[in-house]
Length: 285
Image 1 (cartoon, rainbow, N blue to C red):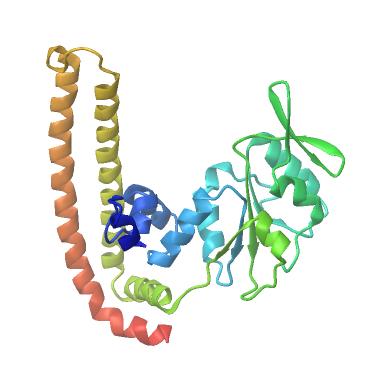
Image 2: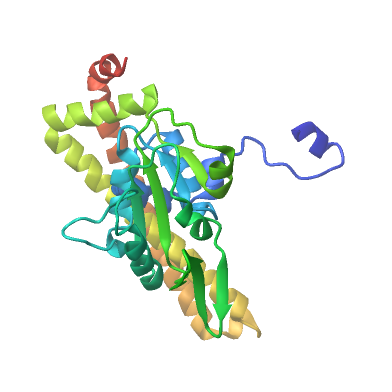
């Protein structure tokens, strides 16, 4: 369709990378630190999970999505008798749903097979009723409080489930099944953590530093842009703006220097990691 757009002079971005377009590097870095695999398919799945308006239904035979979601949502997960997961067949599912939905917690429902309890249909379809300043959803003839921060994830361990079209329309179906390339990358990390533990720890630290510095850079850009847009007079006469600009420039140079140094370190580590690639490749076949 690029040619069709360019013919009437519609601007088109060539070689568009969907991942970098929909999520910044700092966000993806946070996901990787929380346990999301670094392969492109996993990053795309992460974007779907965090951006979808419908509640995600995750196909997760290897349990990677569950580990990532638990780590990512750890601050908002409730705990019941030492457990923060709810089985779809749990007799107290309704009460736990009410608690999470009213307090804006994250509800992770596991044990999903081919169907989901119809009781959850009003929640999946977000049949929200507003009364005064409060929000409610009617679940099985019980009016439950609804908090805008409430999140819900459905997870199945079945590798090839048969979900009905109606269920797929109510949720966002995302397949987290590991690909051969993704498995190879994960095995590489396992091999190195066994053979060269210090190398893998160094890589983790470098990735955290890069992520932190990238966030700092994005915050500086956002702060400067906000200052520029809120200014209504002569820019050169605004001493505070000039000071912010100078501070931003100095910090940006410092952060960029750290990013360059980290990139060189990461390249050196990557070269050493490649020595173990054949073992990971063989294990993924």
